[in-house]
Image (cartoon, rainbow, N blue to C red; front, side, top):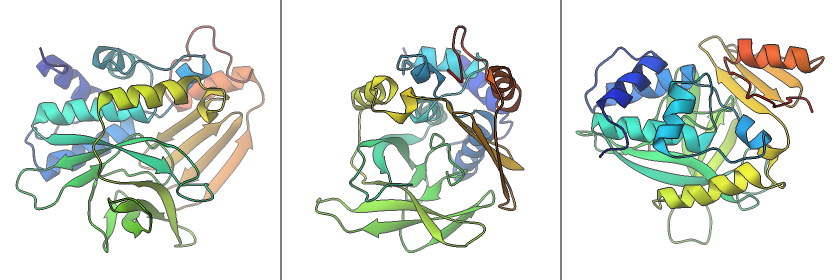
Length: 276
């Protein structure tokens, strides 16, 4: 029995509001990716509650499609992978190191999940990733090639090869800052395939280790066509589509719960204190 049947696909596409075609082609890949990115928020509330979220397909569906919840990279890209496979795409999970804010590409473990997607009839595969969450994240997939820049839903990205000691080419996804026009690294990865058990290990560490930033405080992101919202602890940052940024501190637990539920569209888990 498949992990993702026709009923699951229908429910997922309805959740993200995708009314377009269901052919395994570039238009569908781009449309589904963008619809997912603009519909499902990034959040780590399970980890803040003291547990790693389940990556079992049925439980990811229950949480993100049928419940008023989001997830972090493993959940988002598990859901997208299942949907794309059900639509007929060949999908390979990849893993990378977040370099945004890091001293070097090697200073953090390889804990971010993304996807390599082969599109029938297209000469090159695509990088898909709906689980990075940050303002520099992909909204639409980009071809897995270097030396080109790609515009998608108001964001400009490129892939740049980095020097390293391994046998496979190391690629860094970069986004162009809308205000300074500088290129900013997001994460680095190779095309080595990873399997679901690998992400179970990553997920356990990220979701339970006291050294993981995701277990310490709420970290939420939501992107719409007009703005990007980020909540880091009690700090709420709004980035408008023109690049202007505003920031404020949430006053108390009541305001935090209202913002999470109304602005991010997330039902706060029972018993969780957001600003504890």
